[in-house]
Image (cartoon, rainbow, N blue to C red):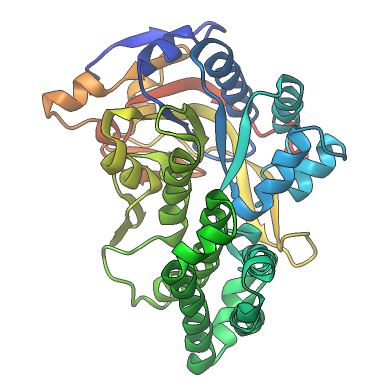
Length: 405
């Protein structure tokens, strides 16, 4: 397999990576799985360089938008220690690794970077954190409408759970009429906020209404996400499926541009599958638009998608566990052999390096046909999916999971 475009070695210096970014003002840094030590360290190193030398001032992370406010307050000097904030301010346990603790500690000491969670609330298991944020806003600007908010809170109650490891089972157990009632209540709330936006903007600072509306949309997106999962599990989903999580994450990045201005430079940290510029193949017979699909369409070359992957080592496995805080258990597992045709197969003999795929993409020649995704390989034309890719020979789970099997 021929890889066109520049391949630059990495030897502890991220300059070959940052040189590729050029003038892009939205830089997404991926990973082929969560809780990986080398990816966490490299992301932190890249963030520091982008902040200190390239003027980036906003970090958007693959974690709940509603929960992110707690992290932002702590970064501005609020109370609590880093472990507490990382546990309660991040969804999907993504704040638990030592690498994340180090990055958060630096962000607090630096003080010049705004933080925002990009994702659905409650590890995509409940709209309640978002609805409570909406309720606080409505209570101040239009208390007569509180029954509308409370109706949405009640209607979504039967499926609301700590994470998407638990909520789908609760959603499945509901009657069709109950599911429809929840969707109706949440849709009505979003429609109300949007129709009265001129009045609400007059009663509060415009950005407060904008954020409240985004919370309401996030609550509705949780509901739609559970509908999408139900369709996938029942085999009734269309071959080109929607993805409420990815749509919401992309819309949060767009929100940041509206709140802070088009000139603001934003670092986005999400999984490779979320940031890729083309739809993600969730199943052999089904794809959905990734967040990166939306961002590439909206921002073009102002969006830079950087994937991270590795050849051998260990990765993070997940399994349901009702005894765990979020209803699932993360553990270390060995990586499977490298798949033929994958980008890892093309780079397997390489030292750490970054590959620029843009020249390859412009040639029209197909790139490698898959990339590591957790313990599997995801089919995708890698050169179309990523602007550049960092390859490491080995990867390993973070220390907090290293002994878990």
